[in-house]
Amino acid sequence: MLLFETISIEAALAWFAILMALILLNEVTRYNKQMGILFFVLLPIALTLFVWPTTSGTDSGAQTANWFAWIKTYSALIGCYIGLGLRFSKRLQANKWWLLLAPGILAINILEAVIREVEVVGMQGITEGMFYMGGPWNYVNALAGIINILCISGWFGIIISKDKHHDLVWPDMLWFWIIAYDLWNFAYVYNCLTDRAFFSAALLISCTIPAFTTKRGAWAQHRVHTLALYMMAMMTFPSFFIESSMAVPSTHDPVAYWSVSIIALAFNVCVLVYQVNTIIKRKKNPLTEDIYDHFAEHQAIVRANR
Image 1 (tube, rainbow, N blue to C red):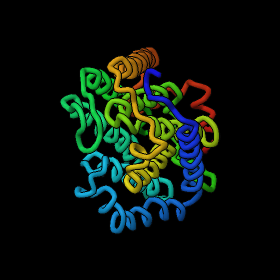
Image 2 (cartoon, rainbow, N blue to C red; image 1 turned 30 degrees about the vertical axis):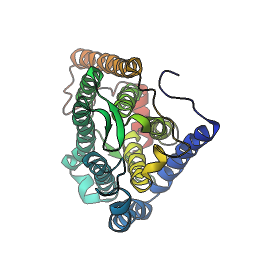
Image 3 (cartoon, one colour; image 1 turned 90 degrees about the vertical axis):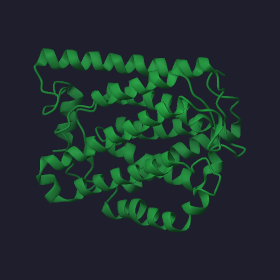
Image 4 (cartoon, helix red, strand yellow; image 1 turned 135 degrees about the horizontal axis):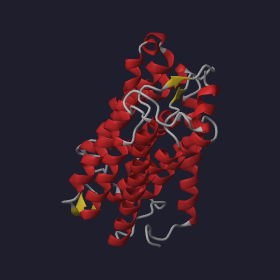
């Protein structure tokens, strides 16, 4: 295979189990405020105090014993806290400026990965307990990440659903941006998380499926929930993803690195060109207005949540 070594039946079953678990736990955590607090406040406190210093601390030798794994975990959790505040605080909802926190944390999250991508360029061989093969493809995908940030639109258009879940809904975040993000993010995990990329693909799909099925328009909320859950699992069981019998290593083939990075960049460039063209034709202000409110999907999402 181009991207991965042989995938055993055991590994495939583990992949689907992780996918289903993330989808299910995402539904549980979005159910109400209490579930959100349990999974994203109380559980991380307990893990931080009693588990992660052993499993992912500097003396553990684990692949998660680096600044990026810790920052990624807590930035995802901060995103969950912001989401909980926006979803359940009438005071925050009353001030549109607070809604900028959601796209802000998303942009920061992407920027963190872009910085890491550039850092990996100079890594060769085993570093921090994991194999790296940095190269010019990292720069290509870093550029795709920057473009993906620039294509975030509808910053002031976020709404909170009126049902019992109070979901954070982002009507202007339509399928083409989501696919562009997924392609960029998969290229990132393939380039920078190397032998953990196989299971990271399940993480990406776990938030994309509900964005198109169970709760349309809430991709950002699905993403931050599943990312936080996945990072907590990775910090707790780091060896499972790279050293267990179910681990699937990447091929470490330069052709594979180039392929995923070029595809991600090409798709993101297409989204950027389309977005700029839409802004010009419709005379839209991308900082204050929804760009795609003429789409039937955008209008349906707004109607369903107001």
